[in-house]
Amino acid sequence: MIDIRSFNQLGHANHGWLDAHHHFSFANYLDYERMGWGALRVWNDDTIAPGTGFGMHPHRDMEIITYVRQGAITHKDSLGNEGRTEAGDVQVMSAGTGIFHSEYNHESIPTQIFQIWIIPTEGGHKPSWGTRHFPKDGQTDQFTILASGYAEDKDALPIHTDARVLGLTLQKGQKTEYRLGKDRRGYLVPATGSLFLNGQTVTTRSGAAIANEETLSLEALDDNTEIVLVDTAP
Image (tube, rainbow, N blue to C red):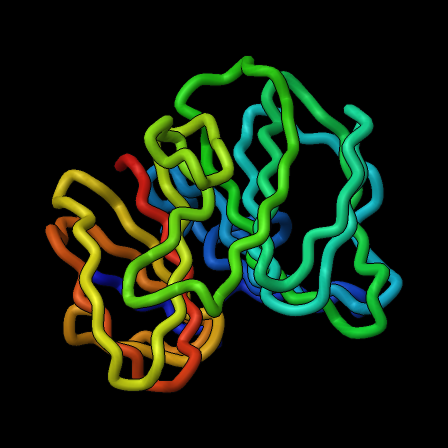
């Protein structure tokens, strides 16, 4: 089963400084049929104006992955962490028992991010933050594991949940496969470009909610089709 959620059907809130599209219920966007997908709870497609951002605010018991598509985001938190994550990079904040943080766009251009929240397998762990560079020119026809709850994925940012966040860039006509497994849930979004996914078309910034699919077959319809996939427990 693959349910395509078109970009123009997503929840939308334009605050001026923040133009946000919500794949699932979030803040003032309420949709009881889209409360999450497996352990995936939030997928926000945010555009943040230059010189603005999210002031200091709290989180707990949530794995928050930020995939930067354009520009950069600057993070500060109550643990003393501070860092700038730019396009091509990924940051992970494990909120654990509680953390305060801020995220600002100090750049001269709008910053575009996917912000992905995944529910941890167990709560109460120590909060943490980290960032890592994942060069897109090093990606081939196989997904790169960006964040993972599995110890064997040593090059990925660690998260405390039964899930992986993966990235891939394909050129037009290029094909690949990913073994998901019928006991798993997947959620896939092309940040740029479009693709065939098991015979269905997924356009730019639209979402595909996937269940009961052993294997995902992908074919890029455009050059530089940039894909983000969450593989999670149901």
